[in-house]
Image (cartoon, rainbow over all chains, first blue to last red; front, top):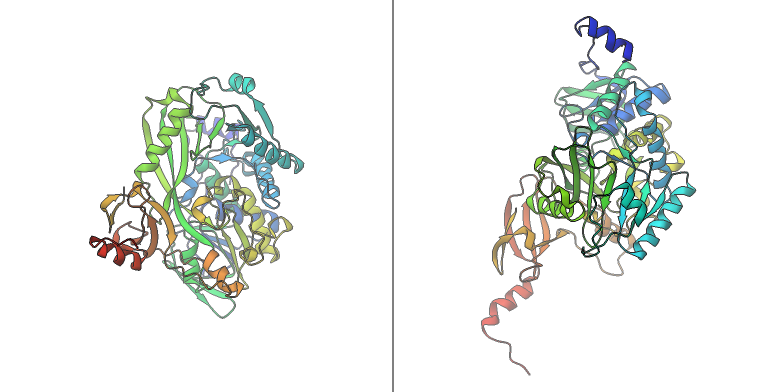
Length: 422
Length: 100
């Protein structure tokens, strides 16, 4: 596989663009692999990539019922940040952010990672104190965090609604300067290409329809393209984890599937240089501007459980109200598209990267709202878990047993109600 | 918009309602072992298909109801009051409760 480079772009420009190869193969599935990962989303593809790169395990298949990246990989608002406070989470997401910082070079694929700052607006002294505590804790783990007072914020983002008459006047912001956005499709394609180059088979249009198992092992996966066996199996199908779990006859999970919508407006000239988050008094809204100019934004879950990848209108109204309340200049901007993805909402808002009751089955699930930014570290630690058959100390508590042990990782403090962990 | 036929008020938009959660969960007795509470509080079937769920008609009669709904299509199959005793008491309320 030829690397992408300025020289290759130039040379193909002279030869009619005929010298490019396809970015990954379309292999027929073999009957047996060392590792089979179900789900060719960002987490599954990253896991396969790091299995090959970090652990030398290349006899790997990644299965997907559709095309790679057809699920939540392309249904998010592409925000990358590491402003988590709780032990385990903050090391995990900071590791992820460090991987993001080098991802384009690492993959030889431009994922357009743009560290444009993540700005969380503050509306009360109490909120500022809470945020200061969170960001100071982050800094102790090596992440970056800043408090912007109102004059600084006004200088950096002049066109927010700073009216003293607004329902929730803005008094400042907490900021993570290294946070930003990336191009979500490119991340899926980059990991797919990198994994494929190292020998991983990415098998698309291959739906898992059943799980064959003995009392303590998975023996094979029934798929729409025949039975595929693996010495080790990984599930990375957030949104549909409970369905696969049932196929494996493993009972219940501390997960509910909810849907989350995202929106993009018609393209505008450069307007917003940062990711801005507005969350106060029931409002929940985040917005950034894509490189094409579209305003990309989202808000809360649709509140009711769903496996349907389509959103409902009350949230459209909700985010539109939030948008015009902090950025009144968007009032006449038209919506271009909106879509919904199915989230694994877990009981404490944190993920699962762990072993399971079956000795050769590993679980990567429960990403709530945070799956996109997590994907590099998720793949990294999941590969480590599968290769070494033990959790890395950082993900020690991201287990299914944390609830019975009373060590929930509840970043929001919202309690055991999945829909509240937005 | 989902349209939920509230047994007390008639069919209304779901934005009048607040979503509760899985209505198939039965809470154990207070003195039940921890495993039973773990099961009720944290573990879910997360059905892809027809499930029972609770909603509260927050901006209407404020009653809790149990809705049988398909999580793949959002089709609503049945709705009933969550508290049957209360529902039957209300049905008899044409006869006002006498004050003693």
